[in-house]
Image (tube, rainbow, N blue to C red; front, side, top):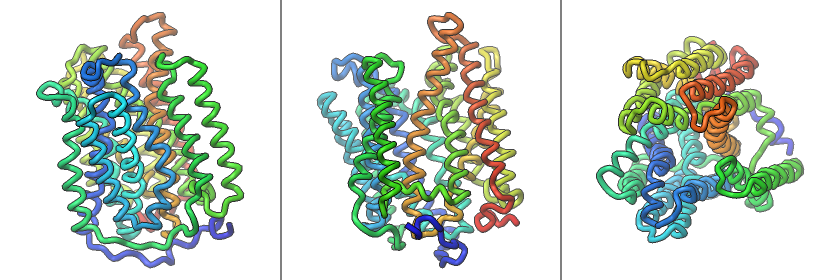
Length: 480
C-alpha cells in the first residue's frame, strides 16, 4: 500500500530515447486507430433509421446498437491496464485493432438486430482496449519533454470524430447501404495492424504485478454498465422510469462497494490513490467539468443547424467541420504556448477563451452568415483542443512510469463516463428549456439557452485549474 500512496520522483526516472520523427509517426499511427473508433461511435447514429428499416424494427429501439457498444466499453476498460502490463502494450493495442475490425466486419454482415448487438459488444471489447492502451503505448514511448507534442496529436481524434461522423454518415447513406458505415473500418484496421507491427516497438515497463483483480473488475464493470444504461435511457421512453432509476441506484451501489473494497485491496483495478498526485487529480476533476459540457456540443449543434435553421445534413456537416480544422491548427501551437506560459496559465486563460467561444454559439441565428458561424466554430475548436491537450498531458506529468498503466486506466474510465454524460446533459438542458417555455419542440431560444447552460458548466473547471502550482508540468513544457 505504501508504494501506491507515495508516487516516486518521476524526474529521476530514465527517459526513453526517441527521435522527433519517430515520435510523430508513433503518435499518428495510434491517433488514426483512435480516430477510427471515435468516428464509428458517431457515424452509427446517422445510420440508425436505415438499420431499423432493414431489420423491420422500431427506430426508437435501435439505440440498443449504441448502448450495447457503450456498455461493453464500460465493462472492459478497467481491465485494460492490467492486460497491457502482463501482455505488452503494443501486443494488446494491435489485438484491440484486430478485435474492433472483426467486430466492424460482423456488424456489416449482421442479418438481424440481435446479431448486430453481439457484434457491437465485440467492437466494444476492442474499443475498450484501444484508448487506454494506445495512450499508454504512446506515453511509454516518448520522453516527458515530448509528451505535449505527442498528446496534441492524440487529442484530435476525440474532436474530429464527432464532427466528421454525421456528414460522413449522411454521405454513405446517400450513395450506398448502411452496412458500409461499418465496412469502412476494415481497410483502416488492416493498415493500422500493419503500421503498429512495422513501426512501433514493444516497450516493457514494470507495472502492476499480481493477479487480475476479478472482484474489482466485476464491481467496477457492473457499476459502469448500470450507470451507462441509466444515462442512455434517461428521458427517452425506452424503458419504464423505474428501470432507469434502478439502474442509477444499482450502479451507485456497485461503485460504493468498489470504493470500500479498493481501500483494502493491494492491487485494485482502478487505483484511486492516484488522486493523491495533485496534477493528476486536478486534471481529472477539472477535465471532467470541461469535458461534460463540451461533449454536449456535437449533440446540440447539428440539431440547431438542421432543425432550428433548416440546414441540410451536408450543410450542417460542413459548418461543424470547421471546428475540426481549428483543432488541427492547435497541434502547431500547443507546445510553443505551453513553453511560453506554462500549464497553469494556459489552462486558466485558454479555458476562459474556450468557454467564451462556446457561449458565442448561443448567439447563432438563421440570419448569421455561414462564414461567420464557421469562424466562431474554428476558433472554438482551437481553444477546446488546446485545453484537452493540456489536461491530457499534465495528468501524467508526475506519474511514475511504473504506475502509468494504472493512471491511463482510471483516466480513460472517467473520460468515457463524462463523454456519455455530456450528451445526456445537452439533451436534458434542451428538453427542460422547451418544457419551461411551453414548446412542443425546441425553438431557437431553447437551443441558445442550452448552449449557455453548458458554457456555464464548463466555466466551473477554471477555478480547479487555478489550484495548479505555477511550475506544474515544467518538465513537460520547458516553462520555468
